[in-house]
Length: 125
Image (tube, rainbow, N blue to C red; front, side):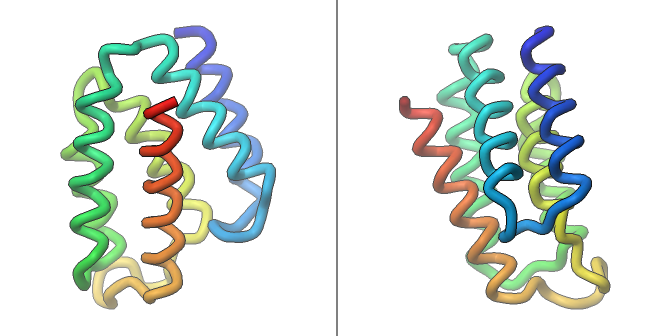
């Protein structure tokens, strides 16, 4: 648990200064926090991969940012909340201006899907 908290602190420290698609440090920090969370809790892998695939399927359609965050929160509840927090922290580094009323831009959705694909790949390692 201590490693997860350190990983999360590292994510929030690095993501506070960067955008969703700009920093290698952001990607490294979120990947590290994600891998540490799954290494410390190997039984989480299957449910986390399922939740990631569910969120990815939602991102294929037209949705707002607020709806996306609500879905992530719903799918990563309870004991999986730390992993949902890692994903949300990554996505929140580049919040759209209009969160509730406008659908996500295609480039934002593609970047989020790419990150989810990377998490799924890392979960299999």
